[in-house]
Image 1 (tube, rainbow, N blue to C red):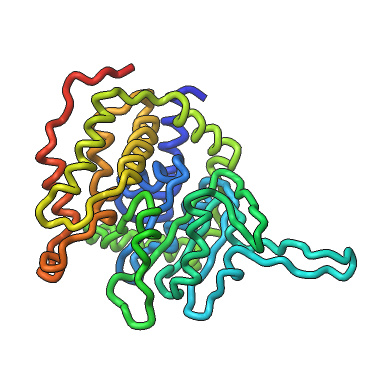
Image 2: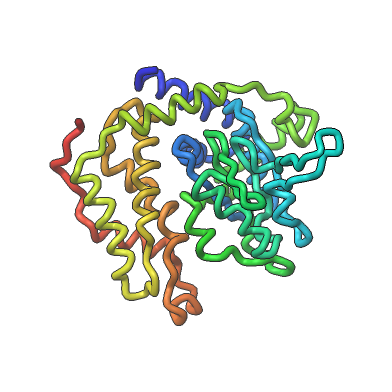
Length: 323
């Protein structure tokens, strides 16, 4: 697969998702870029905006195995990772794998479970492995988590700890559609499907093997100039110096920008990263990683605006090399 073929496949996946989900194409491209780097995504938005539908359509179009966990207050860690059970026939304990043993895990309404349950995802999200009763089990690749949460209904929810939020590569929002025509298109498609959930009717565009090859090509063949690397780190370091910020982005934020910018470059058929590839993801990759000073947080300061200010203050490199 060369980079032109990569672009064709990338565009086809986005188009097939857009045939079901009505929304911004850029959102779909960002979600696909995160998947191509095994990056986890947190969707935070109001109820009924298609977060779960988008995730299910995304998994179906990729042709990868996927699992779903509906997070509830009584959910236990073993319900996610699995447990070892005794088998009389073989007279031994056998691992009964949980839904986390898949390629794409949909963690629906992730903030409805207590921290003990949420922590079951930490090792898998960072190290692509799960430890059950002292035995480490590797997860297959690709593997990434797409989680959803509702930002307005706080009763009966447990805010995600900062350590877990930092493990999400991108924090995205589906948002409301921006025109009456798109609102009507949602209704037309519902009539055409004759069901609320059309995902069972969908055909995949790729499979896990092809998707893994795309990931490997991005990892090994997309060039990033030294000037681009410095540009990324200047942005990350500047978040720690902003007067409204108590704690700035971790180095993991810079790694997130590096990975998704390489994926976006490949999605455009290029084997090199441009500054625009980086700027496209700065808010999505960094805003959820900064903690504002208490007084400014209470005043309602927006982390997204702070990231935009930081990016505007950093000079864009002009003499970077393509290859």
